[in-house]
Image (tube, rainbow over all chains, first blue to last red; front, side, top):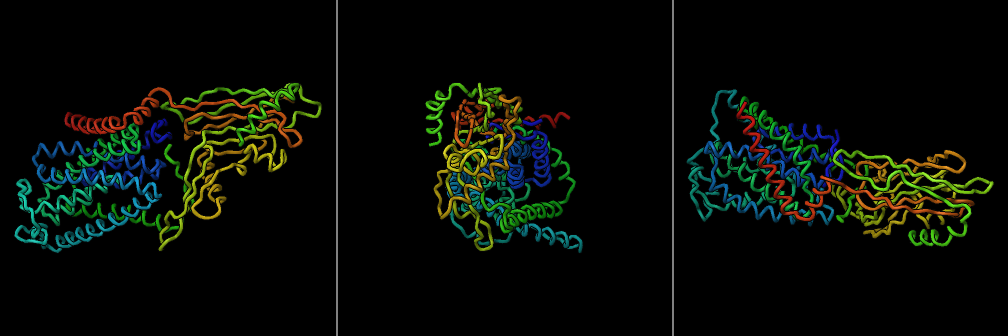
Length: 306
Length: 245
């Protein structure tokens, strides 16, 4: 049965949308990511206007993430102090990102900049993750052990001022890196409709050296706040959130997550990172191909907002 | 200009040929978009009363959607990447359907067709272009709208049910924009408009969809907030659902 989307002003087949929500939710459950970086391109591919796709994906990510946040909160694997610091700068970043999105849209470059940021970010994160997972895999094969976290080691981050103690993360570091990270993720969330976990998790693990068990819960908390804010800001500024589309996506998504988590629990960490890296690189490669291949129609049409 | 020409015609030309009146009607004058709307079909029907012995002439039926300002952008290859470079702003109807008894160039001259904006090649786009010639932009827009089923022309699709009675099916696709439309019926003979009629048609969302749309535009903050709360509720509800099993 087709349903009519009042904001996108088009009708879609609800089963297809439900399946997209489920599929992306499943992958989020497996890999512990929000899945926005898959959802937005998928919706655009299905014919949803890019603005509506970005804004509605943000609401979908916040719904899917909320159940995860609850679970981590109960388990105590959520660093509220770190989360709050990143949230504060994340909200500023989101506001800046929504403003930037409007400027790019008026310039006619929103589509290009969304694609370009996807290619650059997904490409580099994917390569780093692939490299790291293969190294770990090979080391395990050869019977060596690699330790991800070396507590005694210091890097340049430890030389920065304004040090704060984050008890839950067992860290005593400067607030500057979390603030910058939160801001960047906020901007990305607004212009790409993504939560930014795929960027945040590696930075928290490898640069901030947070313990892995706290990383996922804390990044989910940050993603939840930032995507919720992005949803509201898009709704206020561009009227581009489609609540009917969001409803179907979230219902599919929350079920997908539950099944995904079960599958994800059976996979080993480096296997997870290997498959996630492949997925991320595949999306980046596809978007890159679209940017360099000659488009079928050189002209594209955008209706000016009434 | 086209509207003026049409108004003048309806006012002055029609009474002059009162003995052969063109009458027409619509199967429905409101298209309501509901939650399971997937497009519909309208029927425009009409008759020419007391036609001359030589036959009624040619019938042209046009349906125009509300005028919309649209931006067409052209991609150029810059450093190996296709990127939007030049643009044109055009003002054109958001929906356009034309049907006639035979190809338009056999019915009237190019000037006459242009005056009434009949045919996809004869639309006045009022272009404002960032570089050079507007023609490829207008052509691209027509192409894009035709792909979406919003622009359509079909010659010979006016069904003659009898010597004076005609009927046209107008497809209204699911992506049709809301607003007030105009259905125009023209009677041509010897390259000139003998009579014309214009009937309004409204396309609007109704019921739940309408309320959501008004909510989103009237109280955007609360609309966004409710979307978020709905998302959070569904996320929370799913954990309950899965705990029980």
